[in-house]
Length: 172
Ligand code: GLU
Image 1 (tube, rainbow, N blue to C red):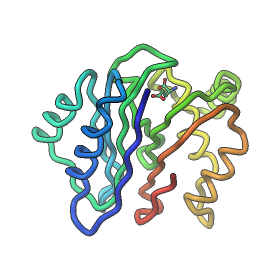
Image 2: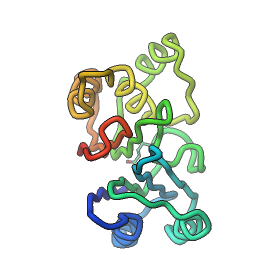
Image 3: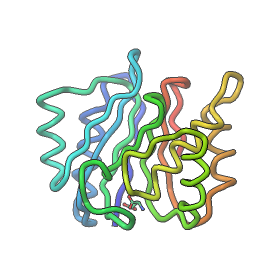
Image 4: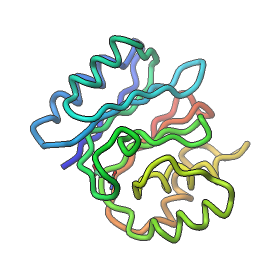
């Protein structure tokens, strides 16, 4: 069973997110990851296995920002592998973590590929982030883009979303 953590704070949220993931470890998972928004955009680390593997990556290349999302994954679509671990990212500007299943992901994936999106994973989740990207335009907030995207999703799911276009917003 996967877990999602999100944080907004005046200090760097990296430690808060890692602490949150550690508290969720008892639920079981196969990989973990986190994304943080800062002045330079969205940055992420992902790792297969224990949250400690993600902590190691964060020590080697620290992430620093005041808003972020994190995830422990229990794979349903796509093998437990780093390229399938969350967060998934679209256009270097939106990051999504997802708990659950998107039942209609195959048709959404075909439509998005026809629009030119390239998929980096075998997950159902990746359609969500690219779909939000299709809606996120000047004059449309991240929240509005997520609401529009979720109207197209079928299934049972929970999401955490951040974007460099709306650097102070975390949509859950
Ligand atoms: N269905 C998604 C995946 O396979 C999310 C799984 C989960 O809830 O951890 O990546």
